[in-house]
Image (cartoon, rainbow, N blue to C red; front, side, top):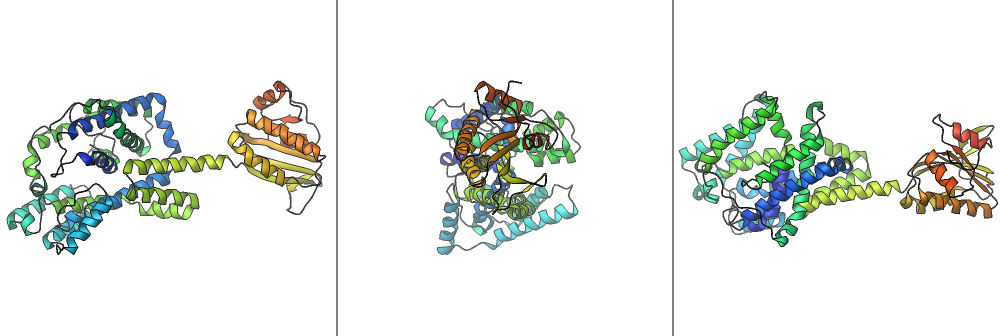
Length: 485
């Protein structure tokens, strides 16, 4: 089944198709099947297109912000059940807040039985995690809540709503439907499906690599995609890997794929016969379990570290967190990923420049008020087309008026292509009009071939892996015309 964060994405996508009972309507079943099918097909296609490598561009701050926002959202969306208030119907945070405020404003105050069960469940889970980590504390807490509610005759009328008071959970295999080919439905589900795949692939990566393993991520992603494709025709939700489930299997001694299969088979009797039993569960006990789960999703240590580490990381984390609370979840994760990519690309447009000059045969940093004849400018970073405009202005500002000889050290420059060549020829012309010459040091062989074939005559020294050797050759006047190497 889906993890908490993936489950919220699914809920947001299927919200318009939920009935008064909180279950999918008959019209929503084909939509669910289509969402599962899209999630599976996108994973299969992505496994062949190298989609797993795209996760390198997702900053950790985006994941931490999204997970923390999802945890906060879970808590806020469960407040009505935790307080024993009438259920709030709506798919978003504003509906939940307005619903709770409206209920309290109309005289419906929190019910003590519900609050007591919520607090008791939370306390049991906290104590169980500390003193009996191997025990199924959540299951035991829910069983105690069921027995207590039955013994005291508590239900919605007495301040402790049960699952059966909110909806009827059918026993047996859930009803299903085939995916729909309606293009409008497919278009409306495409963004949620992409977000589910994006987040699910990230969860898969974290789960698969837990404990230092190095699995074949293409095969893992393809297998998960095929599982979702098959699941689309068997009433399944979009499924993904789970670090929690993986940890539980490992705790139980599972080491092979047979462990996951055994766990799945063990769930079948619960699926077939557990519907009636689930109706006796107090909603407040489920809210308590979700509160503890949500608390674990907010990694305060990493949030604090990312807040302190720098402005860009802080902005990314905050934007994703706020977006998770205010936007549809599929757009929140895409917003964070897109902003992270934009920041990364913006950084690549500003290569690092260091201005040096020669004194007593040694290079030293150029002081702001100095005006020497020889200026060496070290360039570190990409010199692709997007970086050229800013580079032109910065190089122009870095060359003092009296300079007659300018050497650009390109030993640490990357991605130099035709745009860089055009700019260097333009810079050479500008310096020539000022009475200065331009030389290039540490030019890689590929770019030198490009210069030679373009009949560019700017003197160069070829890149040398020995630090400083190419620059020293240029300073000593041993530069040569570009040639095909």
